[in-house]
Figure: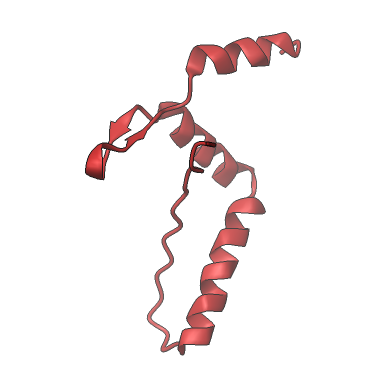
Amino acid sequence: MPEPGGSCVAVVATDARLAPPQLERLARRARLALVRAPSPTTEAVLCSLWAAVDTTGREGRVARGLPRQAVLALYRGRGR
């Protein structure tokens, strides 16, 4: 059985009065913003992923941080 996927949280704040369909559209745009993020935002996301440590959450679920040594080995294997 495959491991469940990870997650990323985007926080959107507004003082505009929005109807439910407008809120859904705003939420979809936030997701797209992560995909199309300019380089400073991309760097911030990557730095956060790199700094993440193993965390135990509700019902004993464990979210693992990146395996840094394995990532570095892959990176070096590509001539970087």
